[in-house]
Image (cartoon, rainbow, N blue to C red; front, side):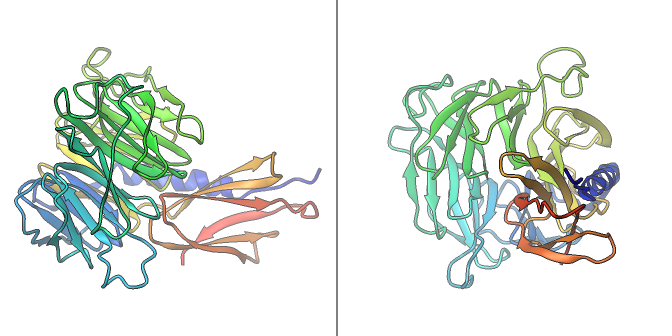
Length: 404
């Protein structure tokens, strides 16, 4: 059998080392307190209480925007694939009094009043937002293809451990929501232990696990969902159906406060960028947490003493927000590629983690001197997967990712 040599393995080690080093160096960019930040539609968008919105094209320069509301704003998403973005508003923000929409990410208008909303995501075909359901007439989730007209979804009343989600026994709070691998994942409950649910359309949901914590963040990266929260260990999916969730017990006491004891405090938000999961630790103010696979965690001293609420990745950098303002990391390495042999299809399984919205080219070479484009694509998710059939006549083949 002829050998298949991959430069992707070398690029992986270099990219991760540079990304980790960048996460040890942060710079204060703005002193406005914020509680959530996302990179979407080519912009960093920071949100906060009293209708606070800040935007930045690069993570360094920030501008306050008018929201027209005093609501607490909690989530933002961008609709991809639009041919007429000035006709259909591609940006959506959700918060305690419903929806805001925008055609450009800077000018915002009040939208549908769907009640108390806690997060929103675009899954490739629709916006999906999740809510605090306080009565039997409310919804647990809402979906929209245009950000204007919304359909209502409800959770099943049997099968979960966190109490009935219909509001009949007190408010059922549904927190973060994430999309990836063809699935939507959210978590919710009535008290301290929340259920994990999945859906393919945002309207019909199925219980798939018990988080045993108040979930604060869910993110998809490297073909897995990772969930973090308060008073419980991180949860990670181990199958493509997102039905099997593993509790990640950290034997190094990285995510435990106090050290070696209870309660288990992980953080207030999690993001994924360039092969790295990054957790904000909020009021704990004792640094940040990183992992490359959801299982092995590292506590980093950067930003110790600073209350960080949320992180996002874009434009080759990480951005964090909190009570002290907005911080930006040093520049991060280019896209990270993980390659493995898929024996079932006799192909190389390539996972490319880069910046959402950025154009990339996958190139191949037999000699490392002359490169040719194998594929051009734009990241619509933090991690893109491609299968490249193995050529039985090739003695060796190298891969690399470039942009543009």
